[in-house]
Length: 614
Ligand code: ADP
Ligand code: MG
Image (cartoon, rainbow, N blue to C red):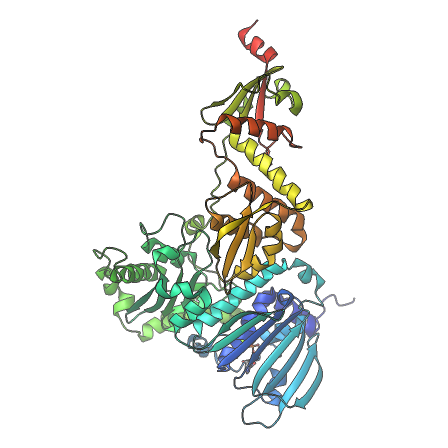
């Protein structure tokens, strides 16, 4: 009988584990930046090529490593940050799993150069497939430089799974901003393909926020500051005018680690009620500090989720703190916004930490799971967030017309798709509007009813789609260029979109940081709000994958068509009515809207007679 169980070679085991820690270039960036911060660096550079797919480099001026540590740091569970299980409760440094470098070394070609400040020479190590292929002394600056090339070069399945450069770059920028916000006392720089995206001097948190978000935020920030025995809150929130229709500029940190929490994000946003339009997301960067024993932070290696002992208290607390801050700056009325006294009286806030608190934590999920599985990242989040998820559902602001009556017998044999006759009015002067929704006229075989919004959207969709191939949309120069500001994570994406937007008639030019100048707009389609058009396109494009370039063009065309088409309920003049009919007739898919709804219905003479029984 032969054995059927094999032990996996170490480098394959590492690769499998790497999947949990390093899912995309941004996860490597996060780990490397956090290590640099943990090494007490005061200057950190991030250099990235091709959205991290070909190269990620992090250079710091921190403590460095000796030659033995330089080799050991790539071993699984090699960490200088935790010695005993109890240390888990005291962790305030960024990483503590000792997995990141082992994972990175198993899925990329890595070069490490490191030197401690007091050492004469440093060490250079090259690693491939988890194996050291070179180690030698080197002359280098104090600190550490990690260069990883060709992420997932040996795991093609993962490599193929990566998204478009725009999306991966956005993820990297997000991680960079999170670390940069948490450590304003550290100077950071960030380059992508030699283009400098950020250069951040060390300074106060406020200065850091303004450097990242743009100078116009200097006057738009309100500070938040609340202290209790249980929890301290500090940071900045944006005045209501910073609210955007898209998410992205919301940052929550617990003990200086970025966390994702739809629930607590809701707490902040709900404090703005009445002050911002519904569906708006104000800027905020809020730090919560509490005894690490009170939270399971970083129990999941990638999801940045968190478990509080009592999440409801934290919710109420944050909401009050934000209300309070808004009230102090007379942005919201003061009444009832002081800290709710009931919160102050709650046990977990009023009582200092005790041994029993600690024991509770030790009997809690984190401790047990660690013992059980010898890993710290198996813990599920406890809170039931399902109803908060609804809150974050993508809100598409598009209002399409219900095609309610299409189920009528009108469909089927009585409708024809022959655009030519159905869209040729017998009398071009006898084209009318009905209910400010339909365009009606008599034609050879009966009556035609166009749904004005659907018809016009289809016309514009075909027009924008055609522009991709041809010479592009005609551009009307703006007399006064309009400034368009996007969130800093979107700026690199928008930069990548500029040639495509130009084709669509939007002539945008970079104007420093995350600002752009709109020099021209589509000539035939003046829009009252170009900023929102650009934001909408960005939202549509963000989730795209690399292989979907065609689909992405289609998305943009649809988005523009929706934006520029006449809406249902708008009164149209006679010329406009006629123009829509004529232009629809020229469409290749005149009778079907790109969403699959009919653009017009034809009611034949025969059908009418049948209805009357004659
Ligand atoms: P962890 O950060 O969880 O300890 P890592 O795999 O990220 O695990 O790093 C392993 C160890 O390598 C760290 O504990 C630290 O001692 C060392 N190390 C990593 N990056 C640096 C750096 N930039 N400067 C100095 N030491 C580092
Ligand atoms: Mg680490």
